[in-house]
Image (cartoon, rainbow, N blue to C red; front, top):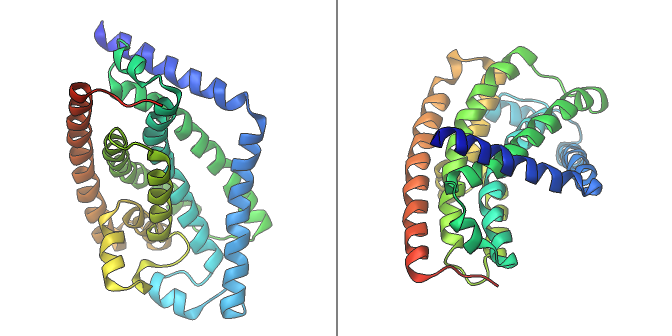
Length: 273
């Protein structure tokens, strides 16, 4: 009976978020346009740096000669990953600013149910955007990749999402203690973008930044997806194995750290504005 009630609560939170999203028509337009701006920017950067779309140096490093295809796959992983960071963290931030976090904590449902309800809406939107982007990018930007391998890579995108959820939970726990969490989240999202490997291979970064990028779940997910799309499963064993270990680590750490943060917040009192 408790499980059924949690599922009903999960559905209710997801529906509420969907209704809020669809009530602002320009959100959908701006989100879709963001993808086109990103890929258009990647095309201009690739041509501006090399004089053409294809780069022999990029192919030697990543296996992709076409910079646009490389960037499109990275953008899909990054957009998918930020879904979870936003779904967990901004749900807490919004409630902090609205002064409703205490009521949410008092609601007869688990906090993970509340978070996952927020995430489900964004997850659905991510797959919706992906279904729009892939055919249009192929037609408009002449992006070419092995579609069968792309489908094979999707399960590992979901495995990477487990680690991203863990990171989102840990960040949400930290937000509970901050007086003004908005700037922190902005900096965190900028850091994630810079170290995601979406627009460039992380191997070109200084060693310290490479280690940091490898320690976050975004770049390893991008590398695993790109490797599978380019070469298939057999050549991607190392990337897949590392991603599975990293995601499992973040899932455990994220859950434990958030539960600890929530307990401390209940003890000391919740902040609101």
